Length: 77
Image 1: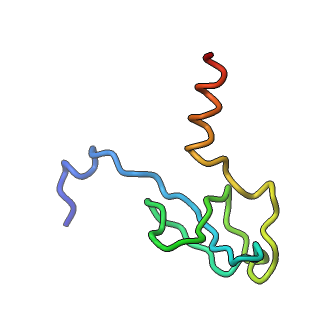
Image 2: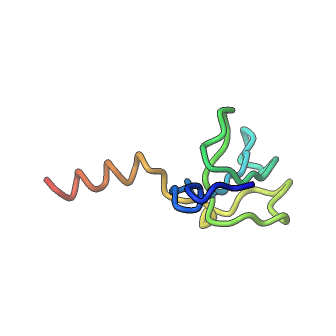
Image 3: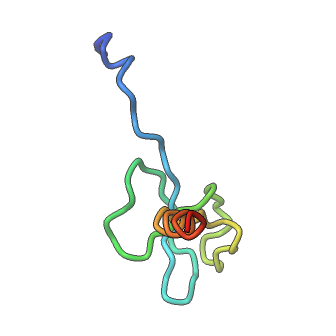
């Protein structure tokens, strides 16, 4: 049974990832709260089953957090 306190604790949001091979072909899709530990996973806006076995569309990728930070610091200069 859930405790009353668990209703008020913040939870990390679910994020969506696609596993790409060396050629950029989508090999797997996953939804989880943290970045998968294995190499090759990229964060995407949504999960689409028809991407499997196909090159991942460029507009499907989310901008990485690292590049957002770099862009923000460049604008501040």
